[in-house]
Image (cartoon, rainbow, N blue to C red; front, side, top):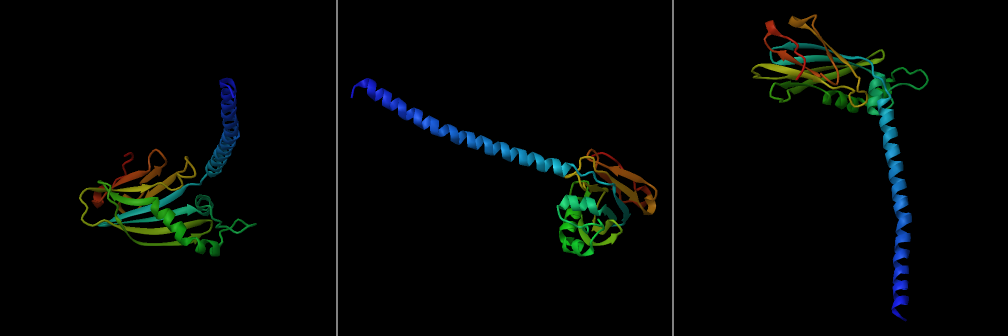
Length: 204
């Protein structure tokens, strides 16, 4: 076999390897495209839910902060990807809610917190929830002993499924009548412990 034949045969081997790689690369590209489409569709479905206004009624007393947090069952259902309403009627189903109680409570308590100005979380000391028509209501108490200065109340409910989610904070006690509206841009308010000067401050 002369040099030309050896070169031709060697070249043919390289072409065979290249041609075998081509279909594999096309399959990988196709799979990647499908995965990207699925991820995009999932994100669109998550963002397609328009949440209703959730709310907190907040009071500060010495070393504790108490909040009564009210959320719409349909919003919680969308956030958890778990059915909480009866099929057909769309009414909250007590059995389904009871089954998802731990998951629902964890979702709420992970997105509602009281912190010191230094960012240290206050201890959650008590909580409970109840159904009120098409809403679920949590009563949560945080204890913040030996705090110097103010506290921060933060709520980020449903930001993960709706960028336009809103949360109304209604103050009780000495600050009765004061309101704060949370959203993605502003999701916390400062709480001054001195009763005479409890005041909401936006920003941070």
